Image (cartoon, rainbow, N blue to C red; front, side):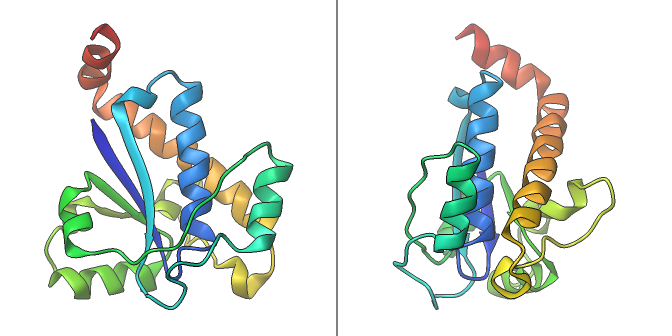
Length: 161
């Protein structure tokens, strides 16, 4: 089983959106049994808060029924993840600082899976929640394809058992 962790600053916009999108994608591809998907914040500023209402609206409009409460990532969460996908360079720097530079091999930028690599901008500031959703959807699809290709033998085994 692969533990996939999405991380943003507050865990009320981008990372829970990515958690919802990726969870649906693995379900649609018939490989959900091979994944544990979660999301966290690098900050405790929103801890315990629900997904930001404009994000909930975009998710509902795209057929998601998703609830979530923000939580800050811990070193244990980092250790237990197989892949950690951050939304931007600041999230990457925060995790690097938190881990003392360890675990770099599992920390990736989700935006590196876009056709043109870029950060996934925070819609809290841009106010463009639909663009963020589209970018996350495209990047999550590409990331899942990357995983299915890179770890094809593991997924074949999971399908047989």
